[in-house]
Length: 113
Image (cartoon, rainbow, N blue to C red; front, side, top):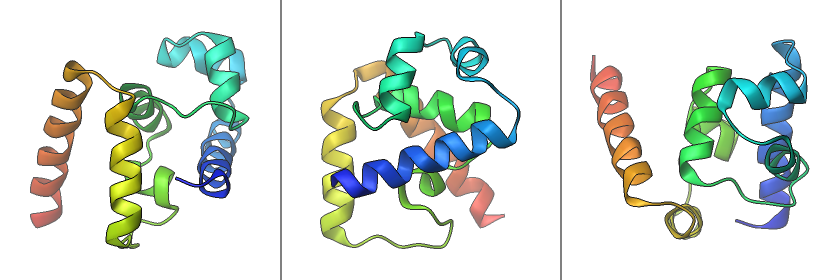
Protein backbone atom coordinates (compact mmCIF):
# COMPACT_ATOMS: atom_id res chain seq x y z
CA UNK A 1 0.00 0.00 0.00
CA UNK A 2 1.17 3.49 -0.74
CA UNK A 3 1.38 6.16 1.92
CA UNK A 4 -1.64 7.89 0.37
CA UNK A 5 -3.70 4.68 0.47
CA UNK A 6 -2.79 4.13 4.12
CA UNK A 7 -3.79 7.71 4.98
CA UNK A 8 -7.11 7.26 3.16
CA UNK A 9 -7.72 3.99 5.00
CA UNK A 10 -7.01 5.51 8.39
CA UNK A 11 -9.20 8.52 7.57
CA UNK A 12 -12.12 6.13 6.95
CA UNK A 13 -11.44 4.44 10.29
CA UNK A 14 -11.29 7.76 12.16
CA UNK A 15 -14.41 9.15 10.48
CA UNK A 16 -16.46 6.11 11.46
CA UNK A 17 -15.05 6.08 15.01
CA UNK A 18 -16.01 9.72 15.46
CA UNK A 19 -19.43 9.19 13.85
CA UNK A 20 -20.13 6.42 16.38
CA UNK A 21 -19.14 8.72 19.24
CA UNK A 22 -16.00 6.90 20.34
CA UNK A 23 -13.05 8.80 21.73
CA UNK A 24 -9.69 7.31 20.86
CA UNK A 25 -9.42 6.07 24.43
CA UNK A 26 -12.84 4.41 24.50
CA UNK A 27 -12.27 2.85 21.09
CA UNK A 28 -8.91 1.43 22.17
CA UNK A 29 -10.64 -0.22 25.10
CA UNK A 30 -13.38 -1.57 22.82
CA UNK A 31 -10.87 -3.25 20.51
CA UNK A 32 -8.37 -4.21 23.22
CA UNK A 33 -5.46 -2.22 21.81
CA UNK A 34 -3.07 0.16 23.52
CA UNK A 35 -3.69 3.86 22.98
CA UNK A 36 -0.20 4.38 21.60
CA UNK A 37 -0.62 1.63 19.00
CA UNK A 38 -4.03 2.89 17.92
CA UNK A 39 -2.83 6.49 17.68
CA UNK A 40 0.01 5.37 15.40
CA UNK A 41 -2.48 3.51 13.22
CA UNK A 42 -5.00 6.35 13.05
CA UNK A 43 -2.26 8.86 12.22
CA UNK A 44 -0.89 6.54 9.50
CA UNK A 45 2.47 6.06 11.21
CA UNK A 46 1.92 2.31 11.58
CA UNK A 47 0.09 -0.24 9.43
CA UNK A 48 -2.39 -2.29 11.41
CA UNK A 49 -1.83 -6.02 11.69
CA UNK A 50 -4.56 -8.14 10.12
CA UNK A 51 -6.01 -9.23 13.46
CA UNK A 52 -6.16 -5.58 14.57
CA UNK A 53 -7.79 -4.55 11.32
CA UNK A 54 -10.41 -7.27 11.77
CA UNK A 55 -11.18 -6.06 15.32
CA UNK A 56 -11.48 -2.49 14.07
CA UNK A 57 -13.80 -3.52 11.25
CA UNK A 58 -16.03 -5.56 13.54
CA UNK A 59 -16.33 -2.81 16.17
CA UNK A 60 -17.02 -0.12 13.56
CA UNK A 61 -19.41 -2.42 11.68
CA UNK A 62 -17.49 -1.87 8.45
CA UNK A 63 -16.26 -4.34 5.88
CA UNK A 64 -12.55 -4.86 5.41
CA UNK A 65 -13.12 -4.00 1.75
CA UNK A 66 -14.49 -0.59 2.69
CA UNK A 67 -11.76 0.13 5.21
CA UNK A 68 -8.92 -0.86 2.90
CA UNK A 69 -10.30 0.22 -0.50
CA UNK A 70 -13.02 2.75 0.31
CA UNK A 71 -15.86 1.07 -1.52
CA UNK A 72 -17.92 -2.07 -1.20
CA UNK A 73 -18.10 -2.34 -4.99
CA UNK A 74 -14.47 -1.69 -5.86
CA UNK A 75 -12.58 -4.50 -7.50
CA UNK A 76 -8.88 -3.75 -6.93
CA UNK A 77 -6.30 -4.48 -9.55
CA UNK A 78 -4.16 -7.58 -9.18
CA UNK A 79 -1.11 -5.44 -8.38
CA UNK A 80 -2.97 -3.66 -5.60
CA UNK A 81 -4.38 -6.95 -4.34
CA UNK A 82 -0.88 -8.38 -4.17
CA UNK A 83 0.51 -5.35 -2.34
CA UNK A 84 -2.29 -5.36 0.22
CA UNK A 85 -2.03 -9.10 0.83
CA UNK A 86 1.74 -8.92 1.16
CA UNK A 87 1.53 -6.18 3.81
CA UNK A 88 -1.21 -7.98 5.72
CA UNK A 89 0.48 -11.37 5.59
CA UNK A 90 3.82 -9.96 6.71
CA UNK A 91 2.25 -8.38 9.77
CA UNK A 92 0.11 -11.22 11.06
CA UNK A 93 0.34 -14.61 12.70
CA UNK A 94 -1.25 -17.99 12.02
CA UNK A 95 -4.21 -17.42 14.37
CA UNK A 96 -5.07 -14.14 12.68
CA UNK A 97 -4.86 -15.78 9.26
CA UNK A 98 -7.26 -18.48 10.41
CA UNK A 99 -9.66 -15.80 11.71
CA UNK A 100 -9.45 -13.95 8.41
CA UNK A 101 -10.06 -17.14 6.46
CA UNK A 102 -13.13 -17.92 8.55
CA UNK A 103 -14.38 -14.35 8.13
CA UNK A 104 -13.94 -14.45 4.35
CA UNK A 105 -15.70 -17.81 4.08
CA UNK A 106 -18.68 -16.45 6.03
CA UNK A 107 -18.73 -13.28 3.94
CA UNK A 108 -18.74 -15.32 0.73
CA UNK A 109 -21.71 -17.35 1.97
CA UNK A 110 -23.63 -14.18 2.88
CA UNK A 111 -22.89 -12.59 -0.49
CA UNK A 112 -24.20 -15.67 -2.34
CA UNK A 113 -27.46 -15.58 -0.37
